[in-house]
Structures are given as structure tokens and as C-alpha cells.
Image (cartoon, rainbow, N blue to C red):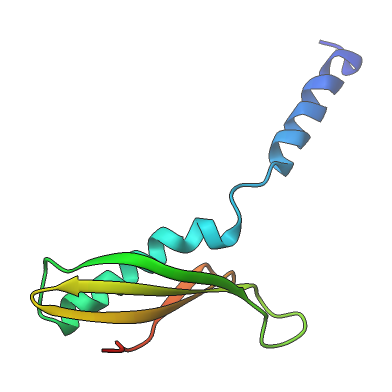
Length: 103
């Protein structure tokens, strides 16, 4: 193969590498729900607890050049208990934090 014939393959590879995935808020939602459910299972002492998304939104960075964050409000029920959990996920390492339950 000559350089000229390799050029279209190279360009195609560059375009494939630039393709973006789903928005951050969509990408992190399953992890946020899972985190809220795991926390509720522990706090409720209820392995059968399940969760559902109530609300989600992108949150402005704390500082001008800070990481993008997404905030999720997740309702969890199980074993006669019900609470909401706020989970915040950050693009800084794709990490999430679940706050305490609101009964």
C-alpha cells in the first residue's frame, strides 16, 4: 500500500476516534442509581431495595475551569421504607458521591 492509499484509512481512523459517546449526564446515570440503591440497601438493612430516577440536571462547576458535574435525585424503596438520595457525579475521574437519605 502506498501512502496515498493509506490516507483515507488514516482519516477514517481519526474520525472514529473523535466520535463522542452519550452526554455525561446519560453516561453516569446508571452508576448514580446503583450508588443510591447500594447506600439504601445498607441504611435500610434491606437487600431488596430498588431505586428510580426522580430528577437529574447538569450542575455548574465550582470553579471556572472545574470539572462538569451532574446531580441526580433518586427515590429508593424497600422493606417498608422510602427515601430520596442525592448523588453527584463528576467528570473528574468519573466518580460519584451519594449524600444521606431524606425521609
